[in-house]
Structures are given as structure tokens and as C-alpha cells.
Image (cartoon, rainbow, N blue to C red; front, side, top):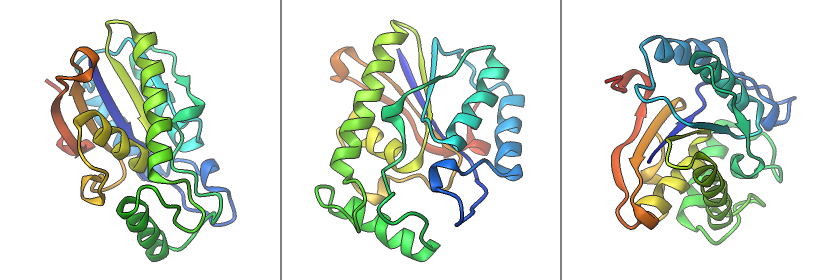
Length: 197
């Protein structure tokens, strides 16, 4: 069984709109459409699940249309809960994200802790894994929780260095029995660097 995790590409940043309701930008849509147009993914997943946040749902809808596969939302697969602060300027966001990864058991300015978010995204993954049976699983979500899932499934410590280099990236693993022998096929790669063979 293979897990592929895709983080949503670029979004329309609107401080007046709650972050979970942000939509994909034209540039983000174009990047994802271009990836799908190249024949990605080469292996058709048995199940496509996604975060309930609008940007992830929009990305999953584009993928589902290309694959003729109905996307399924999973309430546990949303991004780290940042509702305590809502939108913050980029530099402040990056500082809080650094703190999130540096101290996984502590809240940064009221944000969900990395440990709690990791447990939640793992639960979403396990539900998807069970529903996919022996087929491949494609998850569409976000950079931070995606990184936390990647760390959990590869036995790596939670660290910012494991984070995606930009929005719109993918990692993929072949999953071993009971996850004792998970094999990382590739870490976070931007859409443009993905192989479609």
C-alpha cells in the first residue's frame, strides 16, 4: 500500500476571511492543473481523502475530477488549529510555526500543539488506511500537519527542518506491515519536481 500526501498550493490570502475558508489562488490552481495534466499520479489511488478546509477541498475536487474519484472529507485532517490568533502577518506566522515545531508539547500563542495535531492527523490517516484496504491512499491537506504525519510514519522527531519548502508539495511512502518497515519514496517535493512514471 502506498500513501501519497499532497499539500494544497497557493491560496488567496484575505485577513478579513477566516483562514479555513481561504480559497486556492489562480496560480495555485494552475500549478495543480498542470501537475494533473502531466499524468500525476501514475498510480490511481483507491481512496482520496481531504481536509475540510476550503483550499484543501478545492484541491481535492480538482484531483477527483481528473481521476474520476469522489473525494471524501475527513474532519480530523485539518491544519493545525490556529483559531486563537486567526490571520497573522507572514513574519509572525513563521515565528509561531518555528515555536510549534521547536516545542511540540507546548502551545504557541494558543495554537494547537504539534503533538495534538500529530495524533489527530495520524487518526485521520488510520481511518483512511482502513477504508482503502489494500489500495493506495491519497490525502490532500496542509503543510504543517502533513509534516507531522511524515515525521510519525518515518520515525523522525518533530522538527521544522522536515517542513515542506513551499505550498503545493507532495511526499510518498510505501507502507510496511504495522508500519514497521515504511519506506519513504520521496520527501516533500514541489509539484514541478514530481515524476509521473
